[in-house]
Length: 107
Image (tube, rainbow, N blue to C red):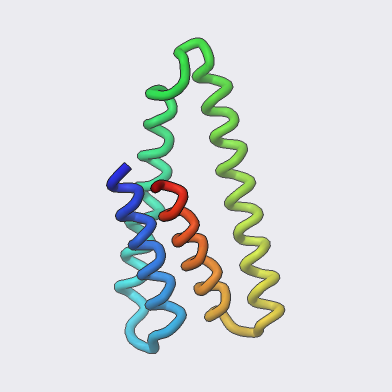
């Protein structure tokens, strides 16, 4: 759980760096890569800890469905927001707010 909280903070920091700075984008992109690589792995590995063995297939199926919906819906919403505002700054702010929601949700 502590790693997920730390990764939510990393998500917020990286998105704010991308939205509000004009420096090199490589450091925040590296942070985002680490977050995107570690959080799904941690969440996926926690499914067997909270679900009975006979229900693992259903639990993983539901997990994958929600993950796919989030990927599709998040990309679609980011595209609409980019088209609406003509800048990626608001997209980064929205994702930073999502990081805040993730942080609060883990408390």
